[in-house]
Amino acid sequence: MIQRSRKIVIGLVLAMGLVACGEQGSDKKHQQVKTVEWKLVTSWPKGFPGLGLAPERFADKVNALSDGRLVIKVYGAGELVPSFDVFNAVSKGTAQMGHSAAFYWQEKIPAASFFSATPFGMTAQEMNAWLHYGGGLELWQELYEPYGVIPMAGGNTGAQMGGWFNKEINTLADLKGLKMRLPGFAADVLKRAGGIPVSLPGGELFTALETGAIDATEWVGPYNDLAFGLHNAARYYYYPGWQEPSTTLEFLVNKNAYQALPDDLKQIVVVAARAINQDMLDEYMVKNVQALDVLVNEHGVEIRLFPEEVLAELKSLTRQLMNEKSASDPDVGRIYSSYSQFLTDIRQYGRVSDNADVNID
Image 1 (tube, rainbow, N blue to C red):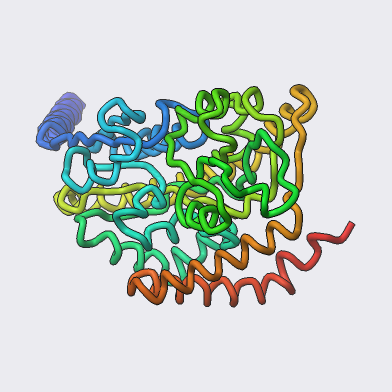
Image 2 (image 1 turned 135 degrees about the vertical axis):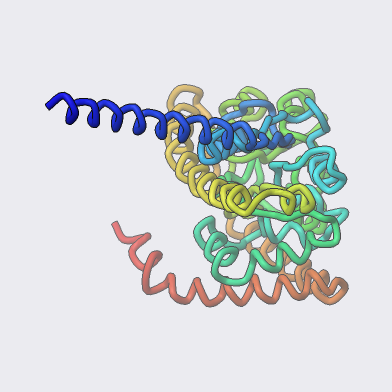
């Protein structure tokens, strides 16, 4: 009996020794894992609802999924680089990542706007489908390849509003001489209609509108517009958002930094971006409803519908613009061909599916 007890004790000691060795080996292995630290610069005020929260949530998700092996510090607009310098910062390696909107780089890369917003173009879900299963993402990656930047969809605001105006828009003539903050292809369309597009970051919109430096502005929609207090600077809130039927945001990744990651961390970056892309759209769908109710019922905002005549002319000018740009720029022509064909096909299907009962009471 004593001998048997001795064998049991010896066995337990040996087992405990093996466990201890295993724990020491695990600790040693964990200590050998190097933490990768990245900077992520954005075009939005730090922590701004929706736009500013998305990169923060992305960083949190990457940190959790990687068990702290990839730590990303997020910088708001102006903290490390200006709002409109995000692309250059990522391209040069000043920051490993960025979060912004592709139409901000239209002067540098004319075709970039397709991957943010196109007037009278795709809805958010149509855009996600084109990017991830219709060849759009591959075209986007090819477009940014010369700059050493890898793009990923980084959220969508859904359908935006037409903007805030300090004068009524009854005919196309009312757009002539109108100074309006407007980015991307829509800025070119406004110019053709006789307006004056102005480029401004979000943080400057309220002051510019209030002081009369601009006559109108579009930003995003009720959720963000309420946060900026734009209802205190303009009287009329127009719809629909012809200029941005949906707006895709982008995560920009420095190619060299990405390639230096081990395979599992690469996948974590991709999966986290895809998750945030959907998360932002879900949030905007809910928050816009709530914010519009506040704007109308608590602040007495006047919501106006653009006249059909104005929308029809703007749509005609958009077609002219796309055809001319396609003829003069191979990248625009190639991407517009894919974009427009996908939009045609998916809208045909939509007539007998998603959109079939939209107008039925």
